[in-house]
Structures are given as C-alpha cells and as structure tokens.
Length: 263
Length: 263
Image (cartoon, rainbow over all chains, first blue to last red; front, side, top):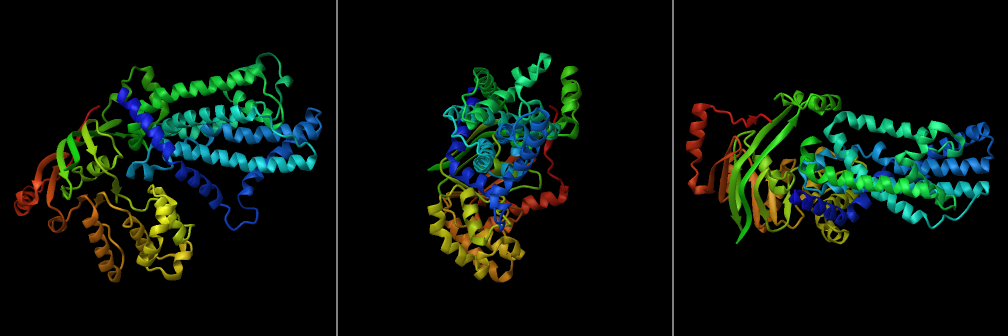
C-alpha cells in the first residue's frame, strides 16, 4: 500500500513538473477553436453574458431587484459556478478523452487533471475580463476583496481532488460519464446563483447549508463583488476541499495503475 | 553495464464487459454481495505476461519475437511505463524514447512549424531544445512552403514525413519500437531508412517488436521469444534457430492465444 501511495505522489510531482506543457495545452485548446475570429477566445464568454443578462432582467423583475444589483450578483455567480462545477461538468472526460495518450505514453495521470483544471481557470479569467467590462459599463465596478486569494486556493484543491475522482469513476463506469454533467445543470439552479439564500425559508434552506458547491461559490463570488464571504461559506468550502483530499487519497493511489485499462 | 533489468515480470490485464462498466450493475452487485460480477464474462483477466526476465546492457539491440497476442506490445508498454506490472521488477536507467504511436501531439488545425513545437512539447522537450532542432526537422521533412500551412492541407505522405522527422529528432537513449515505422513514398524511403539507422546507432539500447525475422537478423543482437505471454527464449540471436521455429510453427499451426483467467 505504501508503494502505491509513493507512486501516487511521484505521479503528482511529475504532473506538476509538466506545468509548462499543460498550461500551454490548456490555452491552446481554448484558443484553437476561435482562430480567425475578431474577438478570439472572448467569444467563450458570450454564453455567460447572454444568460446572465437575460436572467438578471427576468429574475430582477420577479424579485423586485434593481438591475445594478441583480446583474453583478448573477454574472459573478455564473462565472464562478462555471469553474467550481468543473469536476461535474467536464472533468469526467479528462481520462476518457485522452485515452490514445494514456494507452501509448507514460504520462503521469495527474497531468490530464492539471490540464483540465487549468483550462477551466483560463475560462474563468476570460469571463472575468468580460465581467469587469460590463460592470464598468453599468457603473457597478468595485475592486475585488483580498479574500479571493484563499478562496481560489480552496477552489483549486477541491477541483483538483474531485476532478481526479470523477474522471476515474467516469472511466470505470461509463454511465457516470454521462450522469455527472446532468448533476452540474441540476446544481446550477439548486445553488444560490439566480436567487439569494434570504429568499428561502424552511426545509429549502438545506440547499444552502448542505450544498457542497455553495461554499466554493461564495468564497469567490463575494470577493468579486468586493465583499468578505460569510463564515459559513468558508466552513462549507473547507469541508468540500478536505473531503476531496480524503476521496483522492482513498481512490487515486489504490486504483491509478488500472486507469490505462479503463479508458 | 546493465541498463535495463526485468525480473519476474507478470501482468494480467482486466477487460471489462459492458455489464461491468455499467454503474447500475455495479450497485446491484454490491447489494447482492459481489455475485453478479463473479461471472467470468464480466471482468475477464487476460494473462498477458508471465514471469518474464531479462537484462540488457549498453549497446544491446533486442528483438521481440512472437505471434499476434503473444505479449510483445504489452511488454513494450510495460517498459515504456504505460502499464505497471502486477508482480516483478522493471528497472530502467536512462530516458525512454517510445516510438509506439508517434502521432502524439499532432493537430490538424496547426501549421507544420506549430506542430513541430506541439509534438516536441508533448514529448517533454523545452522550447529551446525544439528551436535547436527546428531547422533540421524542416529540412528533413521536405515540405517546402507547406511548412507554414495548416496540417489539414497536407497529403498523407506529407504528414508521415513531418511526424517521422519529429519522432526521429530526439536524442535516443532507450528506444522502443512497435514494428518498423514506415515513411511514405519510395523516394523518401531511403532517406528515412538512413535517418532511422542513425538514431539506432546513437541509442544506447533498442527494443523492437516485429513479425519480420529478416529485420531482426539485420538489426538485433539479442532476441526474446514470447508465446502466450511466457518467455520461450532469451539470449544471443545466434542461439535461436529461426528456421526450426518456423517449421514447428508450420507443422502445428498453433496460434498463440493469451490465457484467460477467472477473476
């Protein structure tokens, strides 16, 4: 067992050592699609802008909120969610989608997770640029709170560990590969992005207090809006990250050598 | 000096049926205490390699001989580090250059030059190392102005020349090859052969899996004969009687099928 653990950490350090490769590949995958367009990879943010503006108009009306309040909240929420829900939305493809490399070359398995997480972070940065342009446009521009740094660190730990676990399960059980992206759409509505916790009462508050994605969402979204996240958000985010570490230690070392046979 | 040691290498790889890959069945299986998947049709283990042991020293050229399914490619992949052995030791001193699937990093949207960078990077080279080799690879691949056009405009032969140029530009240390890599049209063949001969000479160790006895006699000094995953012979090439082996094969017309074991 200690041998498997040692190999898992060797895999991790080799994966980190290839940072120049995965950072480049992650950027390349994003930009290649938008070659020969004027706006280039900023097109990625198109869907995020479209849904947040339309949601802000409709939900702002329903809940009686000013657009200047509703739009920043919904937009910051959506772009954060797109990143933190990554272990559910796209990470399941991380091993299956790279099967040709995995069965032919001795790449550290963590490489594919680093590449995927990095890609999701680059998308986040793209969205962030568009977010600030729009905020300046509607006159709601505020500098980010410093809490975004620990928030991002917690998010990276959670994303890396959970993505490894979901990518392994998706490779081993092909149903999981298709099921997890649906969970990501499910939580998009069940997590307070278009609505706020104060709007709910009774048993529905469980969607806030026991939602593993709520903590990560809030520790990044709140700083983007210039505020310190609530203590509860830090606690839930830390629990998600720590559980991710436990799941990683439980599954990755023991099963990593099986991955080439699964994909 | 011994560079590569394999001792008691044993590997069985699992093959998962559709039933075993389904989550529904796995959950049902847990519920009934693992009885469902005990059926040998669901997770089948193929005994790919059984107690293989050999040593190679500086300058050795090893030919792997065996029928389809005798374990040649699996052995190469274990040496490359793709599969980890179930039992036994594989110790390698030096950097492995794998020529199994040389298309690693190829992208149809990128130009020839961009592809050279991409393929080099995916093989762990730094930008500086790639720049040093760039001119020589462009010269060799003989693509003229096409080198600055996207790969999707290339003919099959042009792609082969580019890939071959990159794959053979690395400093070979321990070279693994699954069948002789071919290189397109007749005019190019001689040039490709000279280049391959050169990197064979420069490499410290070469392991070649092929069906061609002629090729092995020309290039190798040692042979490892595999049958159904077991080692039949390892030693100097003079010690193996190719003609006699061929006669026995013809007489028995025995196919080498790896042994299937129950989980």
